[in-house]
Amino acid sequence: MNADHVGREVTEQALGQAWTFARWERSVHQEFSTWAQSILPDPLDVVSRNLDKIALKDAAILRQLQIDDLAETKKAAEEKRPAILMARQYKPFADHISELALQRAGLYLGFGSPEVTSLINTAEGSSYLVFLLLKRHHPDVTLDKAFAVMVALGPRLKQILEQVQGKSEEAAEKNEPAQAG
Image 1 (tube, rainbow, N blue to C red):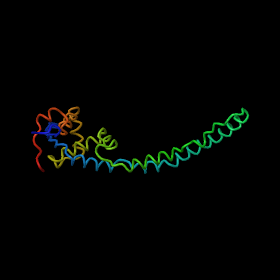
Image 2 (image 1 turned 180 degrees about the horizontal axis):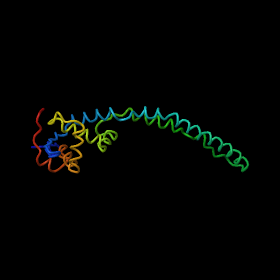
Image 3 (image 1 turned 135 degrees about the vertical axis):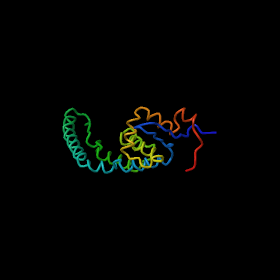
Image 4 (image 1 turned 180 degrees about the vertical axis):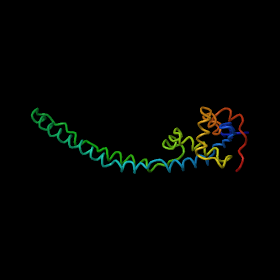
């Protein structure tokens, strides 16, 4: 009995030849994730490149809040009421964004992570995925050729990807037992 979540190989015509897409196995997930990790920006690097600008903006905001607090203190004294002061409550954005970058940097960038998954929706990511799925049966395929195949297939590519993942009815019906290899 075949599991309906197991994908199957798909052969499709494009650019005047038959292209066989391999099943979308764990190795494809792993290779795509490794590639994604190599091109995704390091959140700490991104923040550190902009931290000076952010800190200066924080300083300007805090300076203005302190000026406003002095005016509020004077006005509150004249009106014989407690002053509503804001400067002490201000949380610098530089601190917040640095904390977020540290959190993001510590996360595993696996296939299901938002960062890695977002790459699939780019031309570079989609073509790299197509490259990975084609290279088992077409070891001489290049990234440029994979991109050309992707473009030639157009909307049909979505169906192919669903079939090689086992996410379509057709994949479930035609699925064959997994072969070792």
